[in-house]
Length: 136
Image (cartoon, one colour):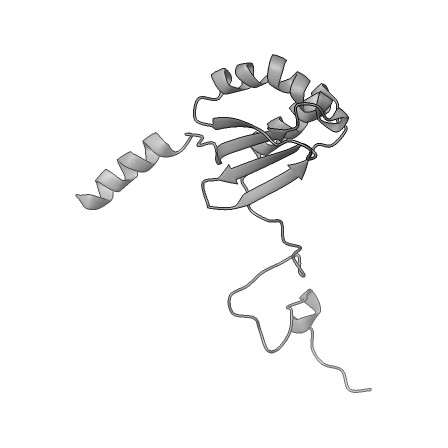
């Protein structure tokens, strides 16, 4: 009975999307020239972003005499800080959308194209392994 309940639950959850971005903080300076793009984004696009994404909490914090930055916090506990110094409103909008679509997991380069939990001592199989051995 428990297995049928589990399969029914997995059928409902299969196509459900959960946004991994939990919180985003927009930090800017009220007077600094490097914060101009972020101030324009806050005045025009930040409210639209917050309304379209109610699962994401948006904080706006002024930081006097500092360069602007965006800090994203994800459901897995990771934080990501991005400097948006001297960026335009459109570029900042692209950065925020990129953060919304990312999962917060750091990318790792895989050393091999294949992975196995029990690597072979004899090496990788090839089609020539089954050919008879010829002694020359």
